[in-house]
Image (cartoon, rainbow over all chains, first blue to last red; front, side, top):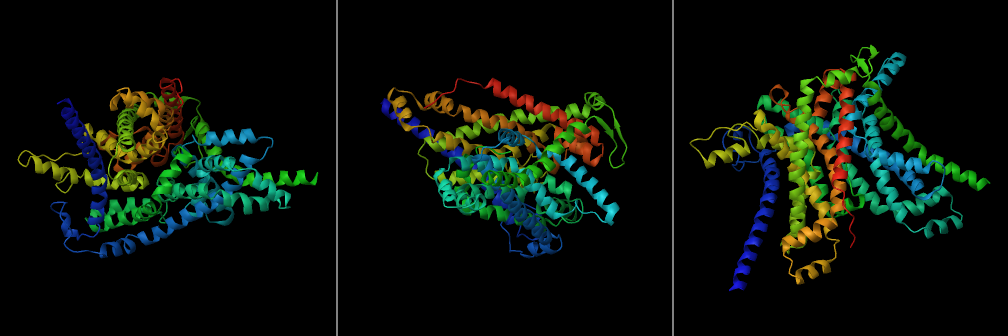
Length: 293
Length: 297
């Protein structure tokens, strides 16, 4: 009798668990899928129930978004800013992490502490001083050459992206370098490799798993970044998230909903594809870093 | 001797670029925030006047700022509690129970974390749309077709903050869940076996094994979550707009508005300093309040 009772309680508990899990899953899947559906709807289909299946597939929404709303250009800008930012970040952060992890020198402790403190610096506060600093440099250059350089420059944006990602990246990479056995680099040095060769040929290839993690996280951070791009690129040249914001405002006014949702898909599709390909690495890598801003 | 010189040169070459970038784009701007907060600086004109702590004096009488601070605290409290409870709960369900499709759920729950805040806010604009085209409103109208009245999620001052919390929670749950799943799955199984032999139920096990053993992880994430809450609320408000009369303004969005749109840089940076101190003190308090004797397994 008692056994039966606990059996049904167990069952009720199981049902409760599945209901909770499925509810949360639905609350995530439905809006995302809905956006994909909305992106191929005809503009006239947006009046009425939002839950209808698209009557026909309007790829013209995407063509419009790319051409009329400039999303094509913004896409290229985002690719450049993200790619260049990642390259600069790795070129700068890898050697620094290696040295901070492996070499004894004066000021090392101070450097490590400064990097840790950098984890707490919040980009949202410092974006205005960065903007003013660049504005000041621009004024200076303008007086000399008659043209600005630092604002509205995708390369400078990439540089700022890389700079703001340094503390987290160095923290993660140097943590990984510390776990690598010393024997390899000692052997390389005895074999007559210089420091640079040892680093590039032996140590950096060994750090590959943590480099992949760094690339993944920073790709997402740079690609999705909004506030720095908004502030440092006040002109017509924009990145995707900022362009999407503009598109949202413009499209709502003109009731071009299809194009708006097509723009949304254009922004999120690359990250979704990347995520599906590497989701295991991403969620494993998280425990490597342990934290995120 | 030569070797030593070579080594020193190697260290310098490796560190220099990182130090330069870090200093120019992080240290100097951070110091600038503090320095600028003592200036009366009307923006693009070069007119800078040192006013000491006057900006702060104005700040504490600025009702808009007080409102923004209240909103921020509200969001921090609501979002933190709901996110933490749900992510710990879901993590423990997915790790401890033999759930079918465990991997599937983990993959799905993490999706919001990879999307741009702009994308999430756009999705939620569609969800919260006040017309019958809105995803939530259309569902509501199904349930009570006669008495249905549109809910202005992003227009009604009483609801707007909850609506923003909803988007923030939706975004954060998966990330923290995956984080807790990792630390929960490292708890050795034999502890649970022993507990269940002694007749401890699932709830008891959760409170006396799972929770204490991941406590240090919870503490760390909590500290960081408070900071990221302030950031996230800023971004959402930036995208959603701050509602009628700025009712849902948060501290960072108010700072940005003052500094960037209003070009009162000095005043804006004074707000920045206050938020910085506020988040620092709050993190320290939370960290202190959640301090427990560390447990090892």
